[in-house]
Amino acid sequence: MSKIIENLRKKSDHHKKTVVFSVSLAITGIIFVIWLSFIKMEFASIDAPKDVAEGNSPLIFIKESVANAYNGIMSDIKR
Image 1 (cartoon, rainbow, N blue to C red):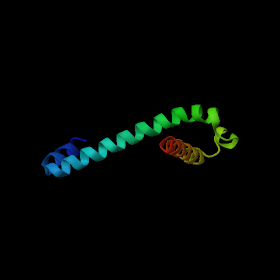
Image 2 (cartoon, helix red, strand yellow; image 1 turned 90 degrees about the vertical axis):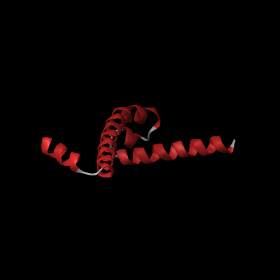
Image 3 (cartoon, rainbow, N blue to C red; image 1 turned 45 degrees about the vertical axis):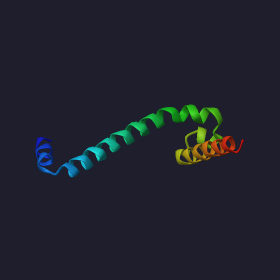
Image 4 (tube, rainbow, N blue to C red; image 1 turned 30 degrees about the vertical axis):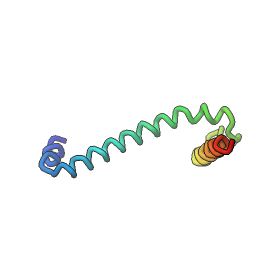
């Protein structure tokens, strides 16, 4: 780990910023996935179809959740 940090210190500022941004994005993504896994069951028990609530397809659940959110936002805009 110290060799990686030492090599990074020798790089240009642009390269350092790119590495910091990438690491920050990866950590944020991991936190988001963990958060999503904790609240998935809460959303599934509220109004998801039976097969999604049983855990058969989380991708379908995410797709339907995004579609429902989009439809809700569009209906609010049209008012």
